[in-house]
Structure formats: structure tokens, C-alpha cells
Image (cartoon, rainbow, N blue to C red; front, side, top):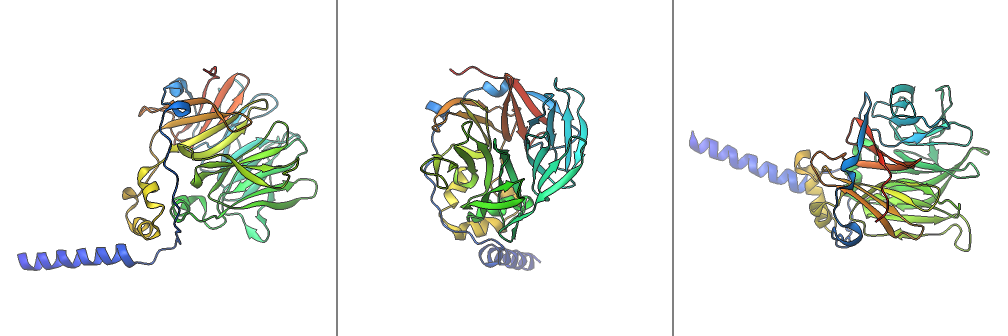
Length: 357
């Protein structure tokens, strides 16, 4: 009997090893060696600024972004497709609309319509009465798989991202482990109804923010730990460069305060295990085959930065405590307050705007 059990155990071990080493996987990872992550010192020094975040709860989960209408009412989405609206004081959250998808980025256009980057539906416009209209679902003949974030320029152009044309949001981890340039940055002209691809080859294209002077747009390149800048005017019009690189976390959303700052949400700190695997595609195939609890995952940590017009860190907000307002996906400044979207909470966050130190 003992011999039989031993043989069975050896056979199971052999099967497990063969599975981990040779079983086909649906991802095609490529080698990439990231720069060593910066220490939490200097401009990234650890602090507890975000312990003051107040939670405004909704009857839903993962409200990724926050937007405000002309009456200062507060809007957010959830993972069931619903858009909630709070009164301006943060009370009485009610369902305003339902995209029947997964609303991520939110911003109001100049006509009072709520424009939504919906990971399942595409780019959606929601009228003040709650009626939803789909604006666009593909670019260049390639459907969106994960419309992610957006901003509206002064001329009405909507700039937005498709995080990955290969993987839907439910397969985010596949896109991260593959580390292929599957993301796109695009524009939608509401006058001509034309969708144009402005940048390709992004690594999980994410947050979008138009500069106050309308000369450039910032786009978060999440899996490469950087923010890119696409020039809308001037001698570099139509070109792009790196705005800030080698961040200490995964950049998710970004927004402009309309004056002198861009607020950047770091949804999580860099993961040492993932960084060590990125130069080794074969290792990432093995990790993909492992149970999800053994794979790199998002941990609780609150992190947000303010950047000036040149990409310099001018404010650094963190909360490393286990009870932090976790997985901040967007930071929006509004009338002396900061509001926070999250992919890990049943609430949006709010706190008074801290003074720079």
C-alpha cells in the first residue's frame, strides 16, 4: 500500500511538473528588463497623508473614477455597469444610469453629457436624463477590448485609451504577464464622429489628461511604469515622448486640476516578484499556469502623486496601513477637495486638498 501511494505521488508530481513546464498558454510573453524601482525616499518618501480619506459608500464595488456636473454633484461607476450620483455634499447616492457594461473613466463634456469609457461597451455618452448613447466601439477596424480612461479637450475632442485590443478587463493579469504593446491611445471627434488612433504600442494604456493650455495630452503606460506625453500643438505636434519614467508603482488614472498640477494615481506599488520575472518569458509562462493565489497580485497600499507641467513630483500622498483606502485608480481635484476612485473599495474617497510641503 505504501509503495502504491509513493508511486501515485511521484506520478502526480511528474504530471504537475510537465504541466508547469510544457502546457500551452494563451499568452505570448516577451522579455523586458525594467529599471530598478526607486526607493520610497526623496520625492517618494513614505508618509501617512492619505489616512484622512473619508469614504463615500455606494451599493456597489470598484468605482474607478469620479466626475462632477455643473451643479457639483458627484458621479462614479461600479462593476455592474451602474453610474451613481451623489448630492454635492456627498450624500444620497442613487443610480443615475446603467451602461450594462463596466464603466471606468468618466468626464463631462461641454454640453453636460457624461462621457464614459466603458471596458465592455466602448465610448458612451450619457445625457442629463440618463439616456445612454454609444459613440464608438472600434478604431482602424479593430474593436476595443478595454476602453479605459478619457478626457475632453476645449474643442470638444474626446481623447481616450483602449488598454488592450487583445485582452478584456477580466484578463488584465494576462496582459501584464505577456507585456506586449497591446494598448492604444485615440481621439473621437463628436462633430465628424470619426475615431483616430494617435498612439499604438502602449503597455496597458490607461489614464488620460489634457494639459490646461491644450498643448499636449498625458497617457499612462501602466505596465511600463511611466507616463507618456502626446503633443497636440507646437513644433512637436503629433509626436510623443516620456513625461515621467520609472515610477514606484503602477500608474492608473491621471487628471489635470486645470491650473498647475496633474494628479496621478498609483494603484499599487511595484511588485518585486513581477519585476524579476519580466526579463524571463519562460518563467512567466510557468507563473501563468500556477493557481491565481500563487501569482503576483495587487496589495493594499494607497499612493498618489501630483506632477507639475514638466513631470516633476510636487506632492506625494501615501498610506501604507492595512486599513488604507486601497487601490486608488483616479484622483480628481475639485473645489478644495481631492476625490479618489478605487478598484478595491465599495466607496469613493474624499479629503481636503493638502498643502504642498
